[in-house]
Image (tube, rainbow, N blue to C red; front, top):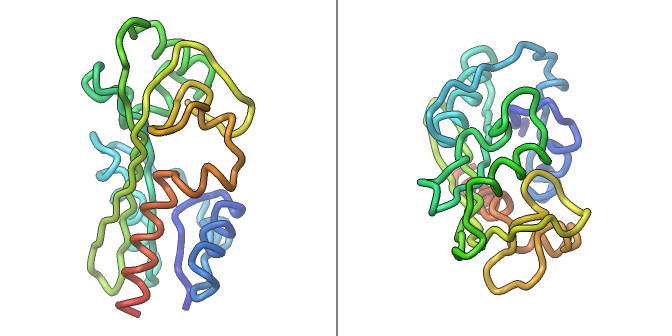
Amino acid sequence: MDLIFATSNPNKAKEIGALLEGKFHVLSLIDIGFTDEIQETGTTLKENAYIKAQAIASEFNMPVFADDTGLEVFHLNNEPGVRSARYAGEPSNSNNNMDLLLSKLNPEEPNLARFVTWICLILNGEVHYFEGSLNGKIIHQKVGSNGFGYDPIFVPEHYSETLAQLTLEEKNKIAHRAKAFDKMKDFLKLNI
């Protein structure tokens, strides 16, 4: 069964296809010839996931899912949240985003945070949501070269290394995105 992933990154689509254990043929937006930009105008990650999925579902009569991910720092009222990718402005720049975040935090505080991923799946006209999160804390220096985004300043709960110090395999075992996709996979197994 074909399943559209509302992403322009074909490698991300292949990665999720592998996570779904080959039971679905996951297609990226490039695979289906969709090149328009989808405006993410939601005020939450969940809303943005829906906006992306709905934009594709309204144009293609196929099952589709989309995700959105952000970092929420509890001491900053869950900033950067929905603005995580462009926290320091356009164009998106991970170092600038981390620098801005660190400038707002007190190094003496625990600065607890979490990464959260929301997935919106539209299947047979019905909307389903799946959430995954990873709790941890923000440290005040960038450590590690693996990963991307805020990984060099985020230490997961029960770990002493940042996400950027973990291998991809280690990260995927605990990651927010993997948890959300596991929930979607379980749902699809029961409903397809």
